[in-house]
Image 1 (tube, rainbow, N blue to C red):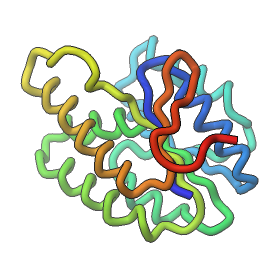
Image 2 (cartoon, rainbow, N blue to C red):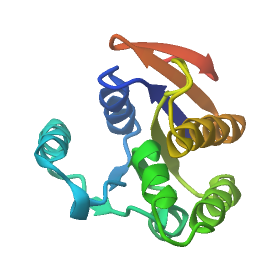
Image 3 (tube, one colour):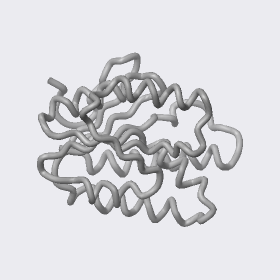
Image 4 (cartoon, rainbow, N blue to C red):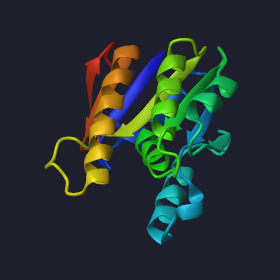
Length: 176
């Protein structure tokens, strides 16, 4: 099953994704998209919180750019891949000197989703519900996030929006 879990900051999206991964009964592989080379103290605390909330038995792979390639390497019928989060991955791609990276990586991800064996849970920040941000890069981030979520939602079996720790199933079977 392919699932897209969306929500704002601290909405409960990562906790829900982890619950769904555990419930899959498969070997969970956690793919973190943070580029730890550029972390500040606050981001280190966020990462530590995420690490403490998930089972130590889940292998963690850090992949800030080549997400589709990593998914193809790790996917198998007995795996559940959990990607947290698409928004950081998008930021990493947009900030590269090579301005074609984002378009290439986005297309590779979209092309690979349907053919990946096993389960996939993608987590992303829903950022387009507020005002239009100042600055070209900020507007591009919001726009590209929205376009990415729309494209992924078409391919995923289930799409869930979380707010205040509550899941709203927007597409697919209800949560059990």
